[in-house]
Length: 199
Image (cartoon, rainbow, N blue to C red; front, side):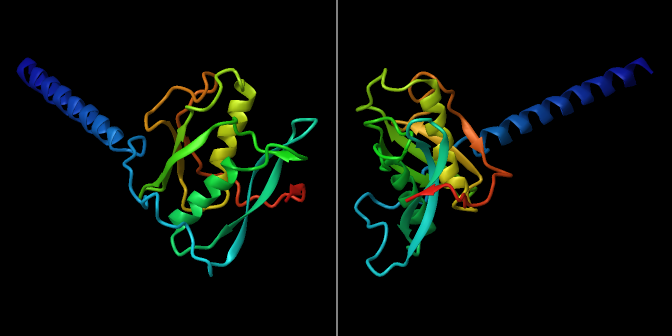
């Protein structure tokens, strides 16, 4: 009886160890590891002159009181959804810095590249080389990251996760304040259609 009990414990231990290894392997292959796919070359146009125009919405900040509001922007319905997504990211990054509605984008922040994986992960690789370190704090950084997630999640149903890289690398924060990571967008609200829209 003791021999059987010892063997049973050994088998159970080996089975548990195998389960732990399999789970670890699967987690390493999950969407947290992004491979740069669905990226066209930097010289390829994002749309053709005849492509139909479409309105998207992104998060802006109302001047004076700092309240969030939706801002409308126009992209072109190119044949590639990847190209449409990249246009939306660029529209957000290049949004207005003056006026009634402004984007919460740090001055000098630029896009290195945008990727979209077959698993539905949008990867935004940003450059902070031209951003002044003290130019924005926790609130501004949190608003920017939330806006980046929303512009993709609310306008493109294919996007399941959003990941922000800094100069091609995983980074703990963008500017030293708000923790970066992978944002799951499951259950996110549908496309923004707020009556409080600025154009």
